[in-house]
Structures are given as C-alpha cells and as structure tokens.
Image (cartoon, rainbow, N blue to C red):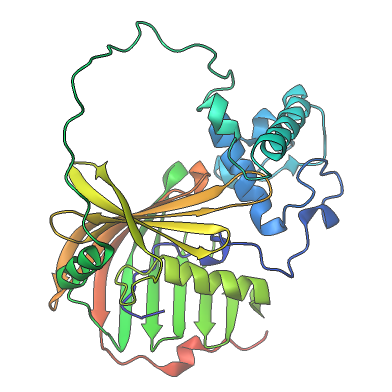
Length: 361
C-alpha cells in the first residue's frame, strides 16, 4: 500500500473481501440458517442486501421487525427478529435460493453464474417475455472499432496524468453524505507505507476510529476500544489497497479488456485478479488517463458480491491530480456514500502516537 491514497470508505472493516481461511460459517451463530450454511458472517449481510436489491425490496419484505426505534432512520432502527419464519416470502426465498444453487451446481460446475438478479432485474416478479415492440434488426455492418491499447500504454498514461507522487504523509478531511439523510464528517491520515487512521463522525452516534499500525490494528468508539481480529486486519489492508486512488505499482496480470462509457467519457477497462476469488476492474479515462471508476467482484459460495467506487472532481494538489469527490456503493442502498474532501495536505508532520490504540477504560 502506498500512502498516495484516498480512502473512500471509512467503514473499511465492512469491505467486501474474500473470506479468511479461519473465519467460521455464520450458521454457528445463527443455527436457523437453512440454505446459506457455508457463508461466513462477514459475507452474510452483504449477500442478503444484494439479494434484496435484486428483487427491489427491503429487509422487511421477508423478515419480521418488532418495535423499531422511531428516533432512528429506517436502516438503523433495529427491532429485527431474523430467526422467525412468519412471512411467506421468506419461505419462498429459501426455495429460490436452493434453485439458484442447484442450477449453478448442475450447469456451471458450482460457479456463481446465475443469481437472483439474472431473472428478477429489480422486480419481485421475474420478467418472462421480451418487451414489445421488438427491437429493429438491421443488416448494416457493425461500425469499426479502434484496437485497444496495450496495458503498459494505459498505465504509463495514468502515471503521467496523476504525477505519480510518493508522499511521506497524507492528511485528509471532508464530509460524508449517506442515504436516509445522514450527514457526517471524517478525517483520514496516512504515514509511511503501513500506518493509517480514519475517524468518522455520523450524528447522533459518537466518533468511530479505526487504525492500521504495521502488523496490528484497532477499533474504538464511545463504548471502548479493542484490537482488530486477524480476519478484520486482513480486510482492513485489502480495503485500503482497493480504495487507493494513486497506484504506483501496476498489477502484474492486468489486461485491457474493452472500452466502456462512463457518463460522457470513454474509458479503458483494465481487468486483473487479486486472488482466486476476487476480480478487480479499473476504468481509465481514454483522454486524460485518470482513474474514473474501480469495481471489485468477489465470488462466494452462493452469489458474487461487488462494490464500486467512482472518482470525480479531480484537482491539482501541488502538481498531483487527486479526486475531491468519491462515490461508493455496494449491494446495500444503506451503504451508498458520497464523500467530498474539503482539505487534502501532504508531507505534513504526523505524530506516531495517533496510530496507537487509546488507553483502556
């Protein structure tokens, strides 16, 4: 990890990363699970959110909720009784998940090719027929496409566009706007190649701190602090790598796969694997060379999980091009975030003590 980085999610420990080999399945804590019995706890709720979004529904479509806190937003109000099977849609959902797992096992060798979204496309009722009138077919030849550039060419253009900085420290502050009218502020500090600390303030809750300090890490809030578990520490490192905007080391297996339109810009799509289950895509502006988007897809035992980061409003900071607005999203509408940086400073004095965990209370 280089510190010429901009972290776009302060909830980095919840990032979608591959399951750590030692992470036990969620069924050990949730014995009522009947289908997703091999899914680890860290993937269970992201997977449920992806399924709900595939059908265009919220959690209460299948799950029972009693006495939510009226003073909090819908997603934070609590009151869920996850184990209850009162609702018919939940029982149907289990059958549908079994069907998806069976199709993938029988037809695709266990690979998660078919998902809930394959048929539902954001609707409870899956589409059966193509829309009318039918599309207009033509015998006109396809327009000629330009050959794609080599990966080295795209990467070199990217380094020239950013200025390829190597900062000793990086200190950033900004605002964090989320769904349901939630507004907060954050600070992120990097020092050296292996130290980072992020602080999020999202009223009415108190500040949340997370830090990476070499081979260790910690989390703290108003209730106290604790060391990061090994699986959390690995996800923290992966999240910081994934959300690094200025990347100085080209992935060895990166290939330019295609060109795709992002807004009003053409982008070269670079694809590479970070591990046997995780694929990343980087979208480079074909004209400026800057990074416009980053997407990660992680294979699981049931359906793929993905998250996306969009980089906007690039500005020159002492000869280095950095984005001042970052949009992050995954399968949950409650996790959508827009972060706007109000201050980005580099090579300033940073006290090593800030990366140490707070004293026990």
